[in-house]
Length: 278
Ligand code: NAP
Image 1 (tube, rainbow, N blue to C red):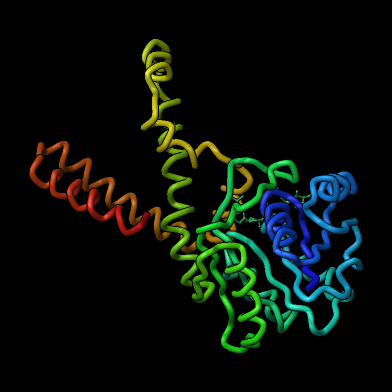
Image 2 (tube, helix red, strand yellow):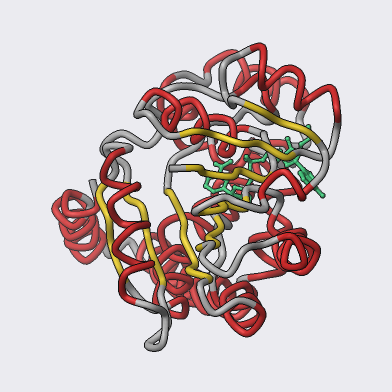
């Protein structure tokens, strides 16, 4: 089976490595010639170049470009596609992409493998990135069932755990567990940087250890990705942020009023409530 990958970066490159290992023929298209060459050298793809015509006979094409380029890439790809080809994407936001892409191509299925690292580009590609990670598929009611089944089978071959839901439910759920944490963690870093006493700031930097490393990790990631999440998932992210603000106000009030019993109750709920998310 021929799989086409467009955008040979962290996600596209990692998919290429795993799919090649599992016997698929992998064809890659990326923006830069140098990336295509590197992908061939690293064994990510069997063949690669910068022209979408390379994918004219692919059974499935996975668009792995930055979010804002997914719809324009599909538009450019369509004149080269054969009718049998299933197209999917890996974008971290689904509603605006699925709305547009499913109108352009009836065998389009939204997808989101929920795995990543802080690195970018072809050099960041790694094997087994998707093993044991959730892989969300967001078909429409009229998406051909056999196309959905094939995408599911591919995700399972990668070792991922497949979930199906609507694009809208996906976006609300990832706003809570992925996009909100980026903003909360970014604000934690910003609050620390706002310390006006240089002595305290320096001391805090010296004393920061594993707790700060865990809680600041996602806020110190790729700024472009954070902006894209906010742009493309604005409604769901704002809903989560507003709810977060209310929760924060409640904690502030309890500390101000020395309401230690209620504060303890909240922390007991969060201690046990964290477990089902992990
Ligand atoms: P990335 O490492 O920056 O890779 C994106 C690649 O797309 C770049 O290497 C670039 O290749 C290529 N590209 C850019 N414009 C292109 C174009 N017009 N045509 C073809 N290729 C083009 O980013 P990524 O982290 O893999 O993210 C890609 C997608 O995965 C995004 O939609 C993101 O939402 C999604 N995603 C990311 C993560 C994560 O944690 N990073 C997790 C799940 C899903 P060149 O080197 O050729 O310029």
